Image 1: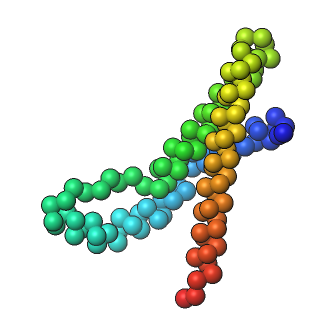
Image 2: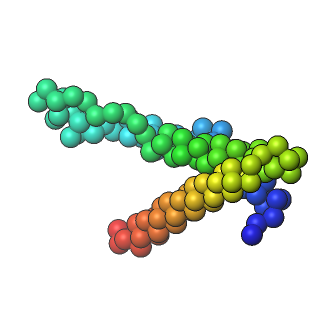
Length: 123
């Protein structure tokens, strides 16, 4: 089980990541400059333009959701210590946070594995 200090550090890191607007800004700007030929072809055929949701915005939203779950878990835990919360609610909040953090770690591992595979490709 993790200590309160490591949990606080993890929440601080997640909060820092959600406020860092430069995480993928360079790549997003490069894709706008080069354009997507398939999107141009689709517009020429009268097809609706695909949504402009970027990977970085989806990632920020997911990390923000995990951060909110962690804060909710902390609040429930504090309320339980003060005798104001139901223990079932505390366990549920902590379990939800644990599952969300495990999902974030799994996505991080997949991204790192994909990056390493790209780096191994011959030029």
